[in-house]
Image (cartoon, rainbow, N blue to C red; front, side, top):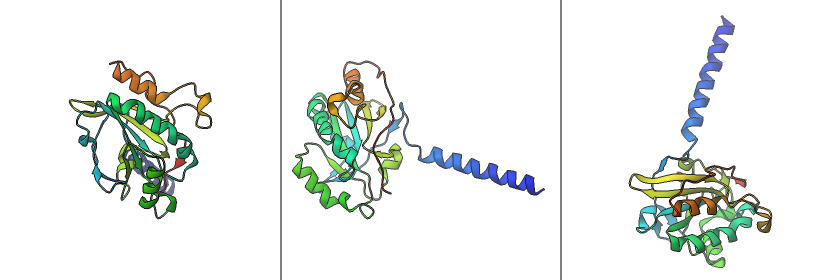
Length: 202
């Protein structure tokens, strides 16, 4: 009888774990992402719907302190410079809890955006409500969204490219390839890769 009860307990815990994982798994390629409204470094709220003429978005979960995020910072700036004029707006979101990581406070975000002359919004995920919806786990973690009649459809999830250490050694530019394909009306060939970076500080 004990064995049966123990087995039942394991099954119940397993089912709960599976349910929990599914709940926080976030978006998959093909899902429609809901909009958000978050505070930008200029103090104003920003939502995806604000970009009336956008064809899509490059949503990047990133931050100040993470060395991986720092390594990719100039590449994120370059993505915005290249694609914002073509209709794909970069939207950077800091998902970290500033109480856990002081370098990711709103004030530090403002300093970073000013120092690096960000031309794109750098938003604070206050209350950490948006990143779990997406399923982001790292900084940086990228989601390429295509604006369609039914909403913003997720077309790519993962890393910016295949070499965080050396930009010159990159052989696969995942985000660029995805956006280029979408701009040409083609399917994205690589829709998901593993995001490499620091874990999000909840």
